[in-house]
Amino acid sequence: MKKILITLFCAASLLSYSQNDEKSEIMQVINQVFEAMRTNDSTLLKQSFVESPNTFTAFINQEDQSQLATGDFQRFIDAVGQPKDQVWNEPIWNEKVEIDGNLASVWVDYAFYVDDQFSHCGVDAFHLIKREDGWKIFHLVDTRRKSDCEVPDEFKP
Image 1: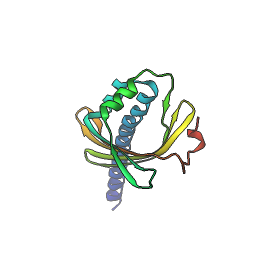
Image 2 (image 1 turned 180 degrees about the horizontal axis):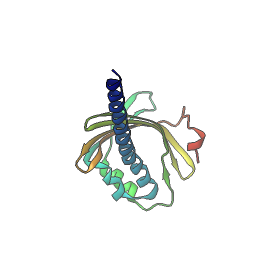
Image 3 (image 1 turned 90 degrees about the vertical axis):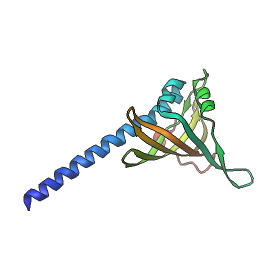
Image 4 (image 1 turned 120 degrees about the vertical axis):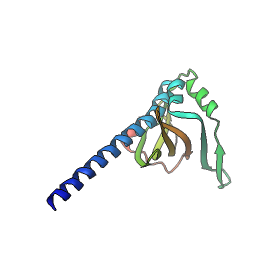
């Protein structure tokens, strides 16, 4: 009985370690997106995604109606890579990572700043697939709002 318990404990420990390692790899890809935005590095940005990812924004319009806007990934790449005087900074927190085999889902709270000026906040929801070259984002949807933003002090400029 003692041997069975020790074996089960060791197996659970290895599984937990493996899961944490996967989560770390996934969050490295997500953090790379925000580093690319801060540094205007469109090449780094593209490395985080599959060739043609789906991107969307969910928001409430001025008429208080729920809307879903389809993004243009190439336009996003171009905007990130464009030289600019301001820094785009999007700190994230409350990371929730779920993994099943080669599929992962990441949900994070964020606030978006241009230099030190607050722009908006919301949630980023990513779906990733694990390929031979690592984890890649194939789907990204975010929410955006300018009010009801509870940004922790350590993420404010």
